[in-house]
Length: 117
Image 1 (cartoon, rainbow, N blue to C red):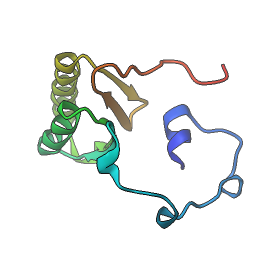
Image 2: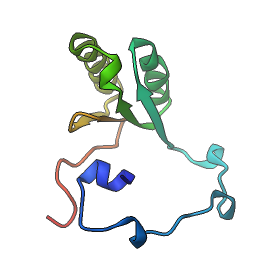
Image 3: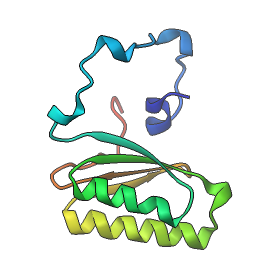
Image 4: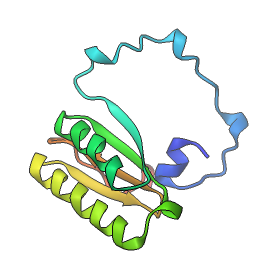
């Protein structure tokens, strides 16, 4: 499942509708970008440290939640910590279904509606 379908829900498109991009064809020097989109996986409380650092540094984080390795109480605590970080930096946070959390820094909001609807 692609990133967009994970973020916005599945669609009628199939994998044949997309083209594989080769990273070598693009300038991948992320140091030049003011804001980077970072990807993370939350398996336990220790994974939150890197996510918090990235958001404090001004990056956007898309984090997959590994539910099978965390209890509901642990996830509540993790989400509360990430909400606090979002408030502290003036950013935004949303949870997409049961498997992803998106956290943004200041001046970056997250729309709660899909494009085209």
